[in-house]
Length: 226
Image (cartoon, rainbow, N blue to C red; front, side, top):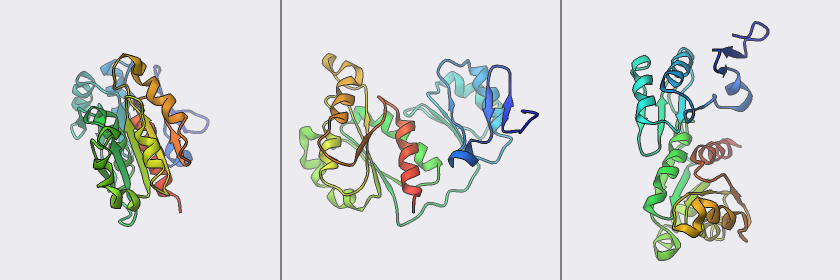
């Protein structure tokens, strides 16, 4: 660890930020892409000596295999590409929940990354999938749930229109999560991103393309505010 303040631990190839939870309200997450399975396993193994939940994002099966040798209690969520280690007992507020919506079934991986991130941070999450604007009556059938949620995450690819529609229906914060789903002119999520940034509905914030972790983390922070 740093001899000066013990706020981070030096591993040579990485510096584990042990102070993140105290500063930001949630511990550091491990971004696995670009790291070797051995590096991911060493980081998660060292973090497992602490008391906080552990979240590793963009993880593949090889990374999980390496982690599970060091931390047998680790779980792999294949669709969301997440590794989780649950060390803290969740105590979600029963009066407040985060609603995660998807425009289509193909948006579920990004939505699940958001939902699981928020759940690991101790929040109640409800999911409603495949309610995109191509069949908007499916969304209107969920209006009671829409108005009951405290925060809403909307995952959508193609043109990303669902976030604007939801933003025009509710008084709650909407976090728009563009996904890289769509044909050629969707430009791997860029069309959805620009459509969401140009939303005429007020109260809509936008995270990066496929950034389910960022959407889930922001939703959890908003849901924690009093």
